[in-house]
Amino acid sequence: MKKLVAVIAATALLGGGTAARAELVDRVAAVVNRDIIALSEVQQRVAPELSRINVPDPKKRAEQRVLLMKTALDTLIGEKLMEAEIAQLGITATEAEVDELVADVRQQNNITDPSQFEELLKGEGLTMAAYRDMLRKRILRDRLLRVKIGPKVKVTEEDVKAAYAQYARMETGDSEVFARHILVQVDPKATPEQVEAARKKAEAIAVEARRPGMDFSALARARSEGSSAAEGGELGWFKRGVMVPAFEKVAFTLKEGEVSEPVRTNFGWHVLKVEEKRSVAATSYEEMRPKLEAKLYQERTDKFLEQYVAELRQKANVEVKL
Image (tube, rainbow, N blue to C red):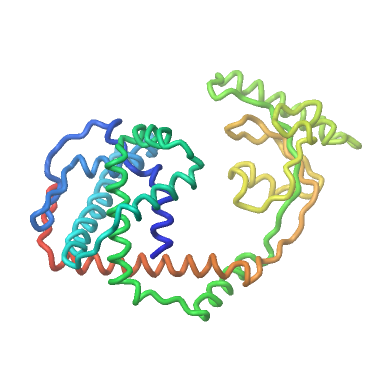
């Protein structure tokens, strides 16, 4: 389960908690045997996901909120059940082990100053003591899973080869493009009239770029407002999944030498030219093997974890009050 701890350590700063920024109402959300889960705990756990909901429809937004709250409560119930198992089995973690995990998080986030790290935690609504306690609990749960689930999780060479064959079938025949672009910037706070004026400017540039003999890179140096202007608007070679969807859709639709109509992104209006396309061979088995093995391992771990928590819940007295 080392990989699970590594993932937690790398992301802990992002999902640690936002209690300081949320209004928490203390009432009982669930009772797990004799332990209580407060509504404030659920709200704190779900706050980062709630802040990312961007649905205009109030009804759909409310439905998403209910689903997120239920998922967070289920997770907290599972954690309470595992904490009871940890206590029963006498699983422990030392202060030195927590120190090591804190040091790993700081290193992965390029933070050398301890006071700066504490300030970042404070911004997430956490004290250092609370953060260390959170990491300690993660270590303990990891050790419990190693005992209860670890022996069941097996990934064979045949499994990895089968996963690679599926990957190779999906990748074969894919392509990448070499493109340049000219950007007409649009301020995020621009009025509809300003957006339209920028579009017309980009449209005129596209017409100019299509003139016979026109050097697109020279035009980009002269007219582009993007950071790549000095390089003639060069974007280099890229595969699908690298650029923003609107940009990518046009890039992979254009023929070699073709210039696009203006394409809108958060940066403004782009005029795009694809200069070359080429097929991309699937990455070799040797290179993909560690990634595929880790993916399969994590998928199977998640599956057994879900089963394990369900078994614990069946044997426990769980009363949900939300």
